[in-house]
Image 1: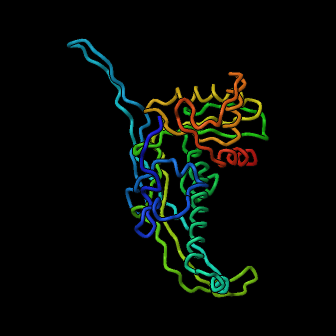
Image 2: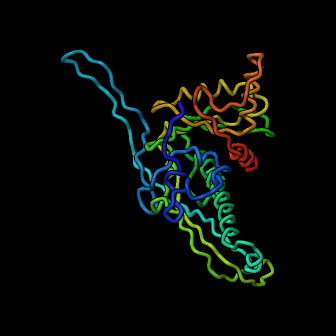
Image 3: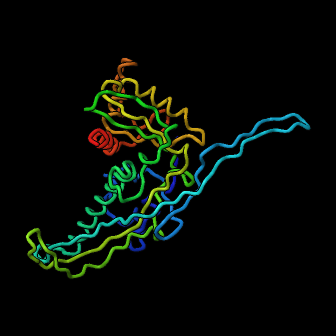
Length: 303
């Protein structure tokens, strides 16, 4: 079921160069959900609108000269404001002067900052307002209650959620504002103040982009709520029940924690009596592991 489509590496560009070609290292390695999700250009420079389906259309056979009452699909327009992705940084002028190659030093720092920025983007995609309440809504904010399977674990130590997503141009997708540009400035002199209010000279590089999440429609996001150590053996059953809820095309991405993936692997090993290797998919649907799936449940328990 794995498909080839545009991702952020294909759509985003750094100073006119595609992200996939710009960096020597993988700046998305700490953001596997960002790396796997479909990406599009936002409909406006700093905002995005899309048509979301909330009910499927009805159709049937009929006899000649006999009418048919068939429901039309229910759709509505949704919108989201882009958030500023900021990977800007300062480097102490004295430290930079000691570098054998100052330009290479700044380039490596830019890679680190972009890697960190994409990791924060992933948190927002999964946790939404649970990560930053002032930024765009994420999967957990937007899943319809009818698309939730409650595992109802009473184990508060190992709780985690699983998301099942249809990522597509008309489904869940990263929407990149300003034509997908990440604008990186040339280094310029700046004065920075430390924690004690004392100043030092620095070289500053700004790296700014715009991004939001197109959340698709009702049948594009599903969730298994609260998997715990006491019901990890039933994960396969929960995933099957959740898959049955999708009416508008099948999901093509499952997001879970590493702990849940390992529990699923062990349950297969226990059932078959033979060792099962690392799981990369469930029923042909790719599995992507994100630390945010574990962090989510902890945040909810603490609230």
